[in-house]
Length: 154
Image (cartoon, rainbow, N blue to C red; front, side, top):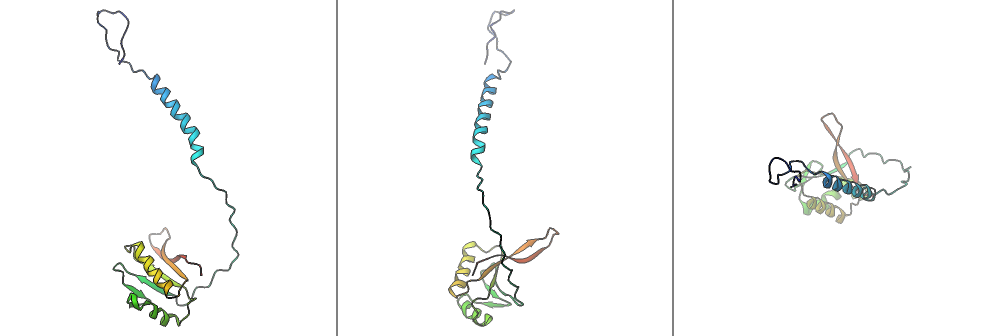
C-alpha cells in the first residue's frame, strides 16, 4: 500500500489507489531469463543413425495359430477353449510339435498386464519363443483391423 506525500485539501495521509508494477516487471524479467537459460538444457536430443533393414518380410502363415486371453482369463486356442495347465499339450497338438511356429497372442483390453505376462511365460516354458502380439490398427474410418503389432524375435 502506498502513501500520497502531496499536501492536498485534507490534512491526513491518504491511500494511493495506483498499482506499483515495477516489482512485477522485475520478477517477470527474472523468470524470463531463467526460462531462456533452462529451456535449452531441458531438451534431450540424442542423434541416432538407425540402420536400414534389408531383411525380407516373412510370409504370413496360411492358418495362423491364435491364442486368445479373454477378460475372465480363460484361454482359447484357435476356436477351442483350453485350460491353462493343458496349454503346452494343446499347442503341441495344434502346431504338430513345431516350436518355431509363431503364436499370435490376443488379449481382451480388460486383461491385466501381469496376467498377460503369465500367459507369455507359459508359452515360453512350453518352448514357443516366437510370440506376436495382435492389436487393432486404426484405419481412421471408424473401423479397426486386427493385425500383429509387435513380436518377440525368435
